[in-house]
Length: 134
Image (tube, rainbow, N blue to C red; front, side):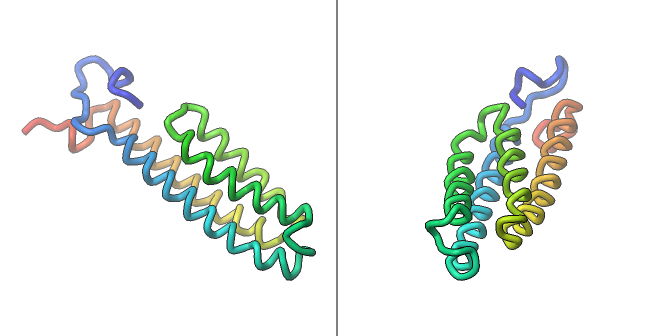
């Protein structure tokens, strides 16, 4: 949400709260990439090795999570994040641990997106502390 999307007569926040949210989202994506990378030893032991389809899936998810950090300013970045999580949860059949990670982080993203929506709503209403006079 930019200052252009704040209704007429509502003070524009001094700092863009969505910039902070992009930082939180990027941090969550990096943390998630680290947790998914920790599935590599499981793939090496139980999934037939890193050179299998499961290993390549884990590596592709790690790259996708890190690359998505660069897309967070785009309006469609949330759709990319949702698509990554759909793939991760669907990978439950290839590696149960990876599907479990997908479920846990999907719940984290539902909460983050709910918070983001709440901040955008309060910003549009002029109720953010940075929009208050005095």
